[in-house]
Image 1 (cartoon, rainbow, N blue to C red):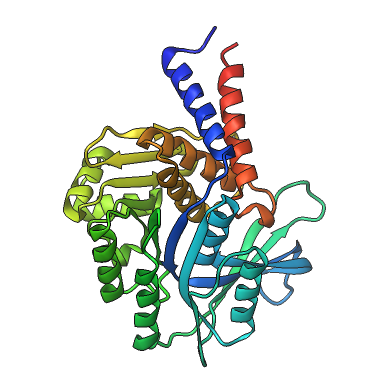
Image 2: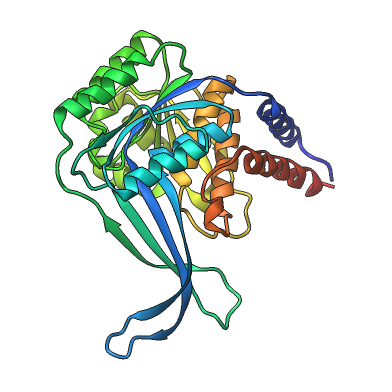
Length: 353
């Protein structure tokens, strides 16, 4: 049995995406957001503590990686784009590591302000497996270190001054909000106005408590859990009707829902809803999922993809993360993304033979 016309069209689209990704990409992208360090401690949890009902982790090794907006910046660099990142770190060891790790991968760090006396956010995940069993790791505990002091207003203003000064000749602007204070009302209002005045698309990865800052952005991203919460808030159970209501209320152009095993759906202001189903048989983890989606959408904008192609590429990017077995695969790379799109196209063709 051969492919249907719709499947042929999707197969052709996937091959076209691969061709475009293999081209020499270039262009500037302004990225503003919270920056943190991710730490992963791996080990075995074979026993419970004798004095409390908690697992004992026997550490085997640990890794560190940049997180949040820095994670996105590295993904953009891997795709061949120049991600100009603007954010803050503290004048501590973690902050120095973040800057060094980014510079090692040729990500420009001149837009990162170092704040004296501030604690750089570090998120440590303890990942454990049973030594006697052949199975993947599971998250045992997440341990956060972060300062609760407000970012000095002059530092915030300087970050946005720099970002606005870099808006000439950029493909898009990304706002990455992890609730650490870099994304704030006045700053977002300023950069949104400048981006709109220059017809520059804006991608927002918001906190649900910060949706008031997302008015008139072009692309807004939710995981399914956040979208479900918004549906309850507005009293609408139907996905399409809820999306239409939110798009109208906030003036968004596109609302992207990342639904894990249920794939990626893009609701649009002036276009039909587009869905790309997840093709993975097993989902392993979700760390870095939204960051990968942000990178994919930025690449789609830069490449001139339509909404349908954007859904396919974003879904493939999410599958790279959802299927990752090792922490070094939690970041999206160009090589992995091309391989995943090619695999989806191949599986579509083979399944219809």
